[in-house]
Length: 204
Image (cartoon, rainbow, N blue to C red):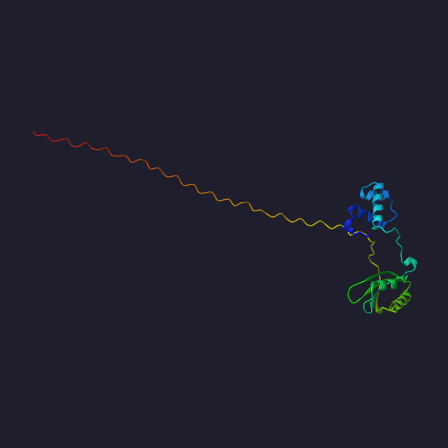
């Protein structure tokens, strides 16, 4: 039963990347990559096969070495509403078709075709155009295959950038109150001594 990449842990994804590059890698070699023992790796690979994540082990071949010197993508425009099952049953009969997908937009079906040469490719396109459900075709010949990756889990997402901590301004401190200037103490005023009252005059 097919599963989604969300069901895989990082160790499973690392094992799948290694197997996609070299399916003949030993369990010990795989364990050295993910820091597990060979028996632990075997148990994980067996579980991936039981779950349908790994559907088989194969080899990567060079198409040019096998005689497929020409490659093209052929777009098929279909009459009315043609079901995907009808398209699939038709294109599966072509050994030159290595991939086929229904797509959105004006085009209904895109097939990847490999041929021996341009003449062979032309014959394949003519046969595709003669299918009862095809109204017309449009072909694009590949000049150079720049990137061809095996089916592997997507790389892990980079961690989200850390948000800078909100700056907290220190509490505003009230300016110190000015101290009142000390009052100048006035020196006590000296009182003048009272003069004694004049002596009464006596008669002579």
